[in-house]
Length: 367
Image (cartoon, rainbow, N blue to C red; front, top):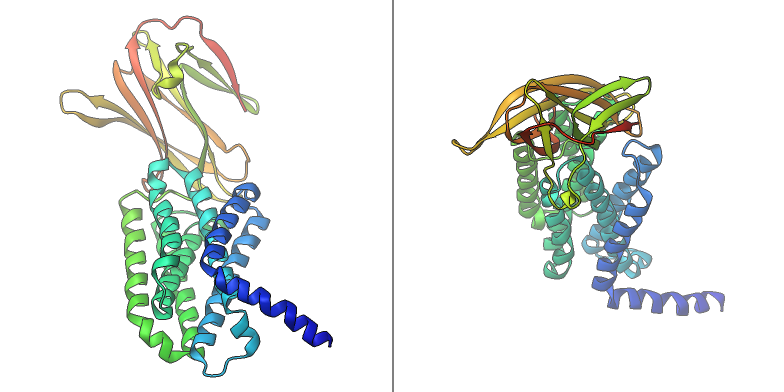
């Protein structure tokens, strides 16, 4: 009697899940994004890494179990009944991973460089409706899984190695390819025929993802995770005083916040300082580069005026702090690109320089 009662409760539940599978998949991904925005703080926090690894594990196990149900002639009844729930679990895990990537990659660089991840997140939602046949959905979810593995490896490897650069990036790609190959081996073991039907799509999808991410990296488009710009600004002078930095700022017009480029008044022989605080995970050691550029009105292009490089050490919540100085900057439009040692853009500070004396300068304490 007890088993019969449990069956009467479980069967309607699975039927409801099956009926609203698509809606639940979309809701689960949105739920993962909301949860991640609330939960995640530092990319190198152990709890963050545990959650991300759990997402990857759930996604892999769910994909393998669904593949097994579709491939086996007589799969266990509990897996057949729970297939829709497994699909939802897959989408929730991938949605959770992708929302975390959007959060961290978005913090790492200018918003414009994070648009590929927004496109893929939207593609996940649309793909849940478009790819209805299982072999097509398998290729789609496997492609997204590889993208998740690659995106995760790109920023987790520097956290554990404490270094960044092209060799670390290439090693991260190789690690992701190896992990994906293992997943494909498991899928082949539990259902070779189904995998062969989707093999072409999986191969093309994985190669496309790998090629695109590499193009983004070597074209300096990919955000430089795990680094993130915590604070930056241009000042008339910056000096270090113990654990704090003292900066002399120039007041801007009341509605200056409408313009992203403040106006700095510099006298003949004066100078400006660019201050930046860059967050890096614990034990990570790398370099940050301040590239001072002035816009040439005649050539209509940005020209590098000076480059200043200094080492940083990770671990500080507010970011590793440093500044560079530009003497006698010419009048006109300026910007300072804050980059990694291999040219990836962490952030940018734009401003204009005009001749004159700044009135009402104020002292700011940067901690």
